[in-house]
Length: 252
Image 1 (cartoon, rainbow, N blue to C red):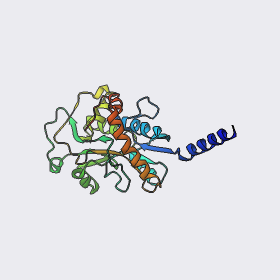
Image 2 (image 1 turned 60 degrees about the vertical axis):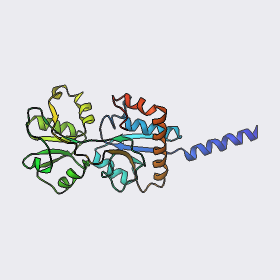
Image 3 (image 1 turned 120 degrees about the vertical axis):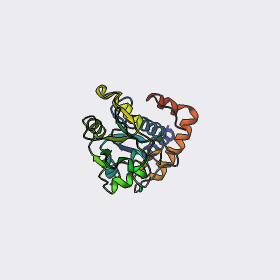
């Protein structure tokens, strides 16, 4: 009996030693990252929780605006950010396999006649972008150099602000992922069927990741765990099961 009790103690201690608290942060970017209190907290959040919890870790998730999520994770207040492209936080550690797919279009009111072909297409326009978002090299460079064609919008509800500003003609349009826009417009019936995209996908890096604080000593372990877990979820069909809850299909 003493030996059994000792083995139980060792097993319990070992579990406690290796069970980490993995804290995730993101802004509200449904269906990728949604309300933490919801049964559908976002498919990238669900993927992360499924993989990490299977490995014995605990996962917490908090919503912030994107700029603060990056800054606080870099400071070590969180383990990782959810929904990042490589250029969102270049110093962060990303897994070898993406867990989301991105695209970005310029959206305008349906009665607008112009098209987006290149950066010169918006020379005399005012286009909304969200503070610290990365949209691809074609857009990021002019935004960072303060091209007057872009208006940077901040806050927890930046997309909603851009939708309302475009409807009010304070913006000529805005840039957003079509899945995210569609998801948000479901809750804004007064704006449904009023927007169209005008031209090509401006995103030149479609892969999205859970990106880890590079100063976290276990970042490499978590990154590898997430990559291996994605392979398993895809093989087992669990990945499509999660995506189906959000009306999505596997991007690969």
